[in-house]
Length: 115
Length: 112
Image (tube, rainbow over all chains, first blue to last red; front, side, top):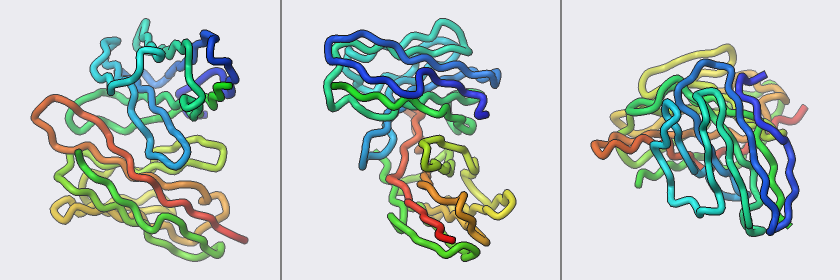
């Protein structure tokens, strides 16, 4: 049990579908993150939310749309994805965000396949 | 941006052996963390260690910030230690952008 829960664990979607990934943290943290892990590449930071405000957006295509309704929940809305978007999407949280950011705690990830 | 290099890329150990994993980084850092990703994809934070030495059971880590490297020691390895070990660093930045940059990882296989 990691304290960060992601659903679904696996998702297969067509290029014209719309789906959402959900993340919930039970740790009382103030910052939440979306990372993408593709085969043979380092983890890539996509978005950071601190106290429900987006503070980082790493040139992610608009077909990925994050939402943070409160400090415990984070969503990643997906639409018109491409096959190269197939990857493991990881949610993480930390107590705070900023210089010397505190330890990251990851969820189990959503394995996304775009057909 | 900051470069993070991990070595070796792959490592095979007999159960019970010891090992040292290395992380070199190209610039001064505020923050360094070690993670273990198990074969099912779960990433666990092992150490938050911007400098100094820490120990947790059979694992220990040392970061020498002035020389820009960190080492992760695994003693008496077990098959459950298999997986990929990642180092991640956050560079000093006056621009207000605080991001962890991950290395490519060391893939460890412990065989019985």
